[in-house]
Amino acid sequence: MGVFELLHGEGESTDICFKAYDARQDKVPIIVMSGDNKRVVSKYDVGGSVLACDIDYEFNNNLFIELAIKLKKSGIREIYVDNAELLDQDTIEQLFLTAKFLDIDVYCYSKIKGKEGSTEGSRRLIMLSDELIKLDGFDPFSENKHFHLYHGAMEVGKTASLLMRAASAEQKKKKIYILKSFHDRDPKNLVSRAVGIRRANYVFHEESLYELGAKLSKREIDIIYVDEAQFLTPAQVHDLYHINRDYSIPIECFALKIDYLSNFFTGDAALFELADTHYQLTKKCPCCSQNKTFNVRRDINGRIINDLGDQIVVDDGNQGFTYGSVCPSTFIREVFGIKDEASLIKRYERHWLFFI
Ligand SMILES: [Zn+2]
Image (cartoon, rainbow, N blue to C red; front, side):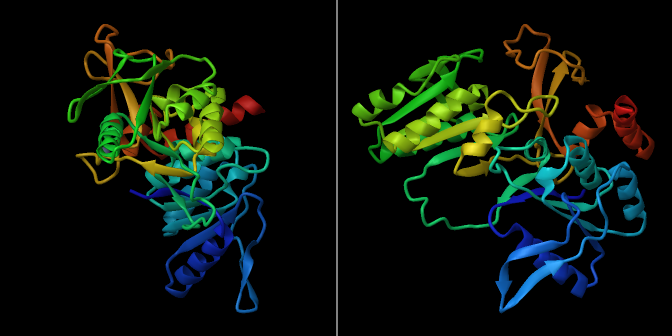
């Protein structure tokens, strides 16, 4: 199974140039492409010479997946894509399927948030990628920036991690405060089968949260945790971000990255854009070595449901379905309905006809 990674931060182009140089030296069959179809040029000059590498193919009006099938047959093993945030979401999806269905490693270099905010392409990349890798490790100005995002699929232990982090903070005599969404079968409590149960201090709906900052600052709260943070509105994510910046209270948000059809919830895009760090919580699929990064909704017979229903339906035991997490291969087969090369191409041709 190919990897599908999102690499972001300073020095994206430099990284591609190095990787391409190495691969070509070692005769690993790779190709380089760019969202702007231009030569990849590093911002940094290395020992007086500018680092650059040529692209092998351009993105054009043809289906990318057809090119990918040809590349697979010619033995290509890795694809590097610079400026991937400039691509549309259909092309991003085809790059994802190139990794997961055609088994070519795909490395997408993309901004998470540009000057004009995130793009359709960067958002789809976050939703589908195995992981987000930050290229510039150390930020000397990050000392008091502490707006963290812990994300993952269902059943990876998000609430358990929150409860353990909260307990360890309290052991260090820190005052903590926990927010939780009302979208839950037990909105007042955080429940983890492994760790236990704990009452939330505040249950949020869609109200403004900024006023909490002054209150919690007066009470000398040391850290704020947010459970089910995917249900925050974008405005509430901004409120929390400003509480962190204005009152210097660290905030840790725990969120489900995508829903059962692989789309963001209301808070996810803003959380990924504003968080200083992204930590992924993972769990391995028992049938393959991939991480379970996708979610599914199942009916009472355990069959995966792939049609459009309400995005948020709380599983309270009476809805006739349950939720779970699966690896990318299972998701592609059961939800995208892709079983062979023909159905792979058909998925995008359908979109194609629609636009003509
Ligand atoms: Zn699997």
